[in-house]
Length: 133
Length: 120
Image (cartoon, rainbow over all chains, first blue to last red; front, side):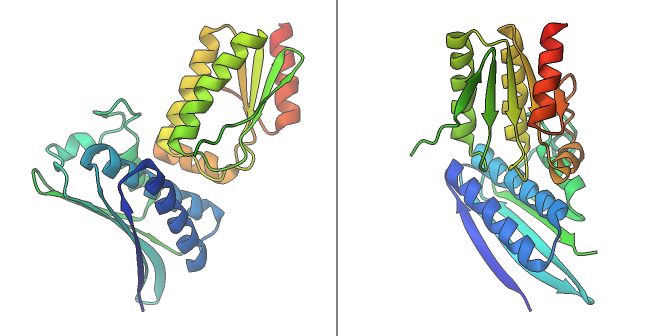
């Protein structure tokens, strides 16, 4: 049982569309208001990173189940420049765009599972999961 | 398509109620509109109510933090009101500390706090 929907990220408006989709899917999965806010915020950060650093990409949202547990999976993928120093990107306060540098480490804290695969010149795929407790 | 956040004047104070999810353009437009309105009205304080807002990401947090600092530069005080429990939790988990920002539970308490601060 899996259901996946996606939003292509090209403009600032697509960031809004991605987080609205995420909030709806989180609600349908059965998450409470705090987890809905966590998931919506995480999607917003990931979508904005695509928009800022890669120019275009995709946010996919999937309702998942594993060993009787239900949850939501977010996949943020782009074919942008990639992340050259992953350790730095995960530091609080590190930003190359004048932002707060809260996005990547923040998403990791907001979600239960977080994985980054990035290759310079090829692109970045970030997978994050949140489980219903 | 441009939406603008209404800014109301009450005596020496401006009141802003953010009623819907902020997109980037609206947030930046709001920054400019608020500072212009302060300049026009010589307002001494601003209350920004966020009661209907159910999430704040790092971009919106930055815009809000910037607007508070800008308002301070122009000699006015800001109180943020109505931050929902879910918003408070996600902001701290994101790693965003709204330090040196006056906050209150709701608009009424926010106005009280602002008037006391302005009298002091």
